[in-house]
Image 1 (tube, rainbow, N blue to C red):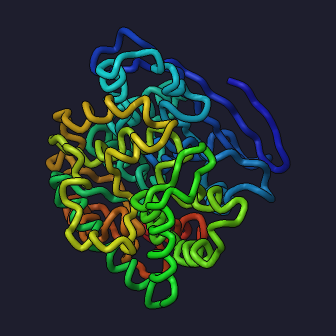
Image 2 (image 1 turned 180 degrees about the vertical axis):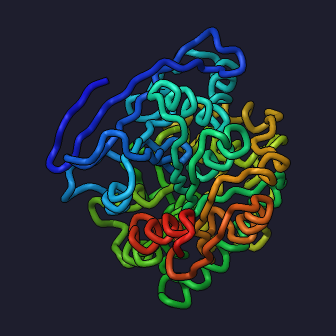
Length: 411
């Protein structure tokens, strides 16, 4: 344990060793890092809130100080000490670069241990290490998938659970999940073009320039037209439609245009885990077999239609940073994954839960989230069209403040 102070905050660093494979308990070990945050002067034994980051492959936020801390963290610290977990493979936890010299099959076997089930078992070992009887969870996006897994396996360890844009489907085929997200993305695409009518022609022209090999990305590779359309991932975020519009109105011949495009691409420049185990996060007792590629609608013959969090094999082959893992990704797509959630346990939990369900979310659909909420008798959903997937970041008082009130029965 190491303690540091920055303006207004006390930071306590924790590192423990965890097994790569929790079912065996022996064999290869990983380092798990977490940073505990509390306000200067607060009691050291305040209730603990674990923040489970989105992703997969997202590390815990790095607080700078009370002035520059994420706004949701400032709100959370009014009620809790906060545990910022670097999920395995991210941040100061053991990075996945440790597998760079392995065969494709060895890589796939290694990556099979980076889903929500393993992350939850890591968190349980950390809770025990810290001597905390029960703690609360705040799950953002993929962090909500981890939170539901936690409810399925260790409900007695939880005081309360809050989801923001991350109540996952249970027992739903990956094909059905991705078919529905394509439909929602098309809706958001048409809404974007209704707001910015000139963007459809700009998008078509830019796609043609991509096909002609005229746009180069920062890593040196060419931007393909199919990569370009994945900037639609931003449509799930507040301000994302505007970001796309401002990109499309720029001159693609301008210096730095490739950097602007790259900043909006969902699978380029992020943790490799985001791409490598993305579809596997939806694999609840099934294999995915590149579900997005198989169920993409015929409407996508139109090159101006955006995609969102839809992963395709070419995302790996066209990215020099991901290409070394392309064969492993193929093996993972064929893997028969075990169940992530237990409906019978979820139906019997008595842990107070609340969820912000964003009406137009193209990543975690409200229809799927509400069906899961029906399985958990203590889960209260709040359905809102005032925010999109990043509501926690842009409106923490409204989102987190409301959820805290809901799990405590005061709103």
